[in-house]
Length: 136
Length: 136
DNA sequence: ATTACTTTTGCAACATTGTTGCACTTTTAT
DNA sequence: ATAAAAGTGCAACAATGTTGCAAAAGTAAT
Ligand SMILES: [Mn+2]
Ligand SMILES: [Mn+2]
Ligand SMILES: [Zn+2]
Ligand SMILES: [Zn+2]
Image 1 (cartoon, rainbow over the protein chains, first blue to last red):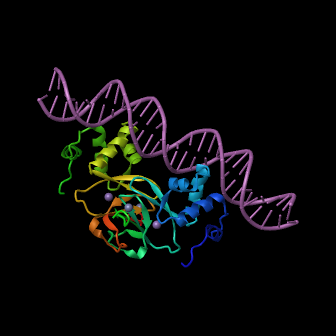
Image 2 (tube, chains in turn red, yellow, brown, purple):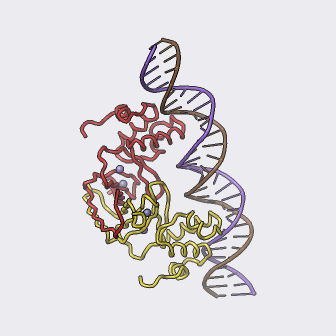
Image 3 (cartoon, each protein chain N blue to C red):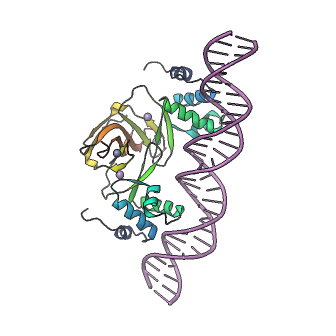
C-alpha cells in the first residue's frame, strides 16, 4: 500500500542483508511493469554477478516471499514482486503474442469450484492466456 | 467418449505411425488415474527406449493434441491424456501432500474474469493446490 | 577504525533436462 | 517383396539446477 518501498527497505524489513545482487534484482523487478526471466534481469542489469549468485538470490527473495515465480507453458520461469496480501487465488495474464506476463489484481478474478468429495482447496493459481493491451 | 480407445486406434486416428514407444507411453497414461512425469512413465514401463526417443514421443503426442502437459510449481512436468473437447478453461488439482495431479472435469470450475480494457482472453488454466481425497 | 563473527559470493564441479544432426532401422503403402 | 517415409539410438552440446568450499563482504561490538 502507499508509496513504493526501496529495495533496501524491503530487504531490511525481511531481515536480509543488503547486497549488490539483491538490490539489483529487486530494483529491476520494482521498475518493471511485467514479470521478468532470470536472463532478462541479467541483461538489463549488466550481467555483473556469477550465475550461481543470481540463482541463489532469486531463491532467497522467493523464500522470503518478496518475489514469486511464474512458470509458463514453455517451461520459462518469470519473476515478479509479490504484493503484501496473501490471497488464496493469484492470477496472471500471459500474452501469447509478446510473451509478457503480468500479475493481475486478484479481485478481477472470481472462481467457483465444485470439487469431488474429499478434496480440499488450499490455494489457486489462474493463468489467463491471450492478447495483451499492447498487442491488441 | 464412451468406450476407451486403444493406443493403436488413437494413433491411427491422428495419422501417427504406431510405434513401440508411442504405444507404451499411451498405454501407461490411459491406465493411470493421475498425470505422470516422464520419469514415472519410464519407470513403470521398464525404461526400454532412449531418452531422446521418449522426449520426441512426448512432443509428438502433445503436438497432436493426444496428451497435454501440466507444469507444476516445482518445475516438474506431468503428462495426461487429453479428452476430445477443447474447452477454453482447463483445470487441474495438485495434491501438495502426495504430489499427484489430476485433470478436473471442466464444468466443476466456473471462472469470471474482469480484465482491464484491451486484454483478450483466449484460454485459461486453473491449478488448484490442496489435499486430495486419498490424503485427506 | 579495528576486530570478530556471520553471511554472501565466485568458482569448480556435477546432475538433469532440453535439443539437434545423422546414420540406421522400422513402419506403411505399393 | 520393395521402396518411400518416418522413427530410433547415439553422440554432442546448451541451458538450468544444485552443492561444497574458500575468499570476500556485510554487521555489530569494541
Ligand atoms: Mn503474480
Ligand atoms: Mn488436464
Ligand atoms: Zn502482448
Ligand atoms: Zn494426495
